[in-house]
Picture (spheres, rainbow, N blue to C red):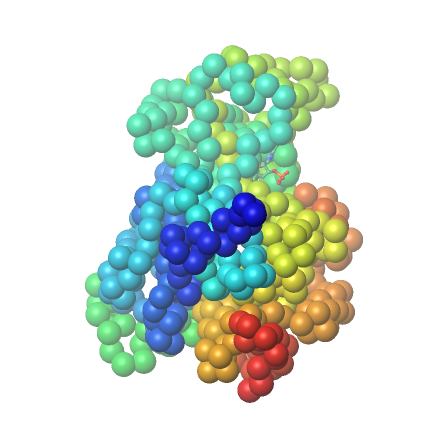
Length: 520
Ligand code: NAP
């Protein structure tokens, strides 16, 4: 009898295919943090697969003029690798990229990272209790555990505007900036007014001949307490307790202005105070009342992600900068056509900048590759059919030995570093327990998942997203089901949960007989 394809594939798994205990997808801060913590736990047979040719994720890909973080640097870093030499209160993107490089060097983990490897798909193989991971070049690898660290603001999105491919000038997306592109003296159009545009626009406005910003929904923009960190302060940060104190203060600021304002909106009306402050700031920055009116959001603060910049709004005072709020009808070779109450207009352009963001909360964007589970369906289909859900934002029933750093109802909306640390702690607890009990198959129970989802839905009415004022926000927070997969909670709450979630939320099974192993 000749061997079936499946037999051949199984034979290949045992002999030829490269296998690791853990494959981590992504060498951004999530992947780096996971790799460091896996090593610390004594789990050393891991491999990071990264599509780019370097580490840093977001900060590798996003290099547009003005790119910087808008969470203070004191809390936008790992608690276990705190720097004392940030140049500013809000680090520029290049410094964050360097931070990623330094973490990898200091931990000595680069030799277990493979670059230029785009993961194209992964499928659970019940017969071998392994994940089969397929790369774009056709290579297949296997892993006992698959850890998704591919991020959430990963795949750039082009706008769904007719003719977008027909533009005869140069088109560039903020997330794939072309540093050979010289905008001096050019007629430039920017589509989008999200966080990327807010940082880019003030940088390019002084050099261009004409800048037209095509705005669909205005963004709430607040001043940013961004300042150079003087040498003496950086020296003082080396004294015992100083950097920790600054981190604590910065974390408290982020906590109040992001998660607490958003999730406990019904109790603490911080959002309306921020709205008032936002209007005052706008009035102080923009001279023309008509332009000011156009820049004023009609939705409440927090319904979509606000932005922070000291020069963005004032840029609209410059004579060469125009704010266009008429709807875009099409892109043509010469530029952009819009239609408003005064009729149609053609905006002739040399360069078109797409500041149109990423595919977020779309069924097939998380993870960035199809993930086939135990029943042969993908996690993307599961979420599309049953709403997004993941136990503590980490694991999904039917997808054994799969964990994700950024899953539905995992992120509270504060610093990503805090998210990475809590989610990785959760994952490492599972892997350590599996090791100590000899388990080879780890799966979250349906019961634990259902209870967690129910608790998220039960707690969400206090969030800002469900207020009447959010209807006009056009926010990527909302998915196709109208759900917002942000975790209603606090930093302390999520830290506590990652340390104390009951291990019997999972089944731990040995490889062969699948008898459940004892839980701790
Ligand atoms: P974004 O927030 O999704 O903004 C995309 C912009 O493009 C929006 O203004 C959107 O308008 C507009 N747009 C999309 N399709 C359009 C169309 N067909 N016609 C007209 N306008 C269209 O993207 P982003 O600015 O790149 O930011 C994404 C996220 O990245 C942020 O929310 C933030 O989380 C992160 N980020 C962080 C930083 C930082 O920390 N400093 C910097 C940049 C980005 P609508 O609002 O009407 O949809």
